Length: 163
Length: 104
Image (cartoon, rainbow over all chains, first blue to last red; front, side):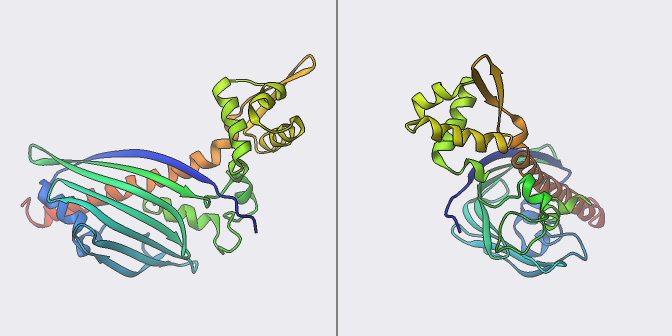
């Protein structure tokens, strides 16, 4: 086993406008039952095992789940800044089969636009060694020997909501 | 990207990107390792499609090859699309809510 590390950085932003007041959007982002309505895996492929939100600075959010192929994912966030109805800043670790694949800093800003709400999401990601290379995909592996995980599952994980 | 996890190799790669094109000799001047070692790193970068070589007379000029970065770019794109799709689902949920609450 080599001890080399691969560290890659990525920053991206997403903007959406919703036909709802900012208090409504904020609640959907932070209430555990409401967030379950939209932050999940594809039906039939993902079973939530643990879902918690402790909405306070230093409080944690967690969504751990099992996939139909036997793998698990674990989203673990810590809230850094909370301004009701207008801003959320949190860091999160993403685990796949108990292995941490990335660490992120995420910011959500809500801005009222008339009766609607503009959402601006910005994430700074550090990938830790573990995304699949072209060669890995050809071999049908994710490049992590101790991770029994098909690359297809990883792409389901990250693109799952698209179907 | 494990090809780039070696700091010396990464420095060589970054110098090629910064300069647009470079020869083994100019790279050796800056790398702090021997010419055979630089050649070894260049071979690894060539194998990973991170750099491409062009022969001109007795020199080979190395330049960045975008093909090697494609897997990382694809992975980042999937990550971004995951959140885009999540926020679209949030929109669907808010829309349903407005409807069931009669516009609130």
